[in-house]
Length: 121
Ligand SMILES: Nc1ncnc2c1ncn2[C@@H]1O[C@H](COP(=O)(O)OP(=O)(O)OP(=O)(O)O)[C@@H](O)[C@H]1O
Image (cartoon, rainbow, N blue to C red; front, side):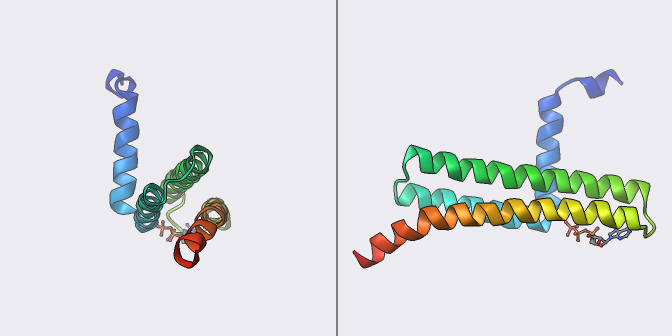
């Protein structure tokens, strides 16, 4: 029991790494984050643009981790098909979708004008 109270940071890191290893969507978000950071460094984003980008990356990762946690608890409590299990999983997936769409809108509004200037000016 005491062991579980130690090193909360290590437990949190294990949760992130395990999700990154097993969840396909988390890997896709990770690739998108790396591409956004590389593109942002290349075109020298302003501080406020970086804040928006890092906020979106953190938001989507956090939602994906919560989605994974909800899926695991639902699978534990309701391995058989149940309408409440479906409701919980669909709502959790919906939260990730909303976060991802928000991140896409922010990314497009930051990067598209800058890339337009870069290629067409
Ligand atoms: N126990 C269940 N009872 C009813 N419907 C379920 C149940 N488990 C899953 N579902 C339905 O199947 C969908 C997919 O569930 P699944 O567990 O495969 O998650 P997922 O959305 O594919 O996530 P991931 O790809 O990250 O594992 C859910 O969104 C839900 O609609």
